[in-house]
Length: 72
Image 1: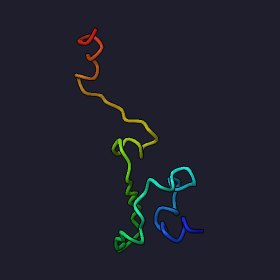
Image 2: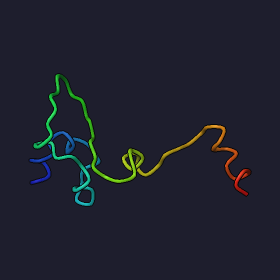
Image 3: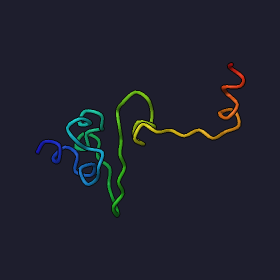
């Protein structure tokens, strides 16, 4: 119940669960006003936004495709 009380916006979608409970900004302490529904998942964790994308961060620049060739 504490999760839904402290995270009313985040609890509307998939990211909030018992394993990820401590990774998110407390919406009671850090509120934002919604004119219309806007799901903003604000996390406090090391590793950047790629952790919020299911730990998948795709890189498709020229340097990414030639990195193994350059590094050996």
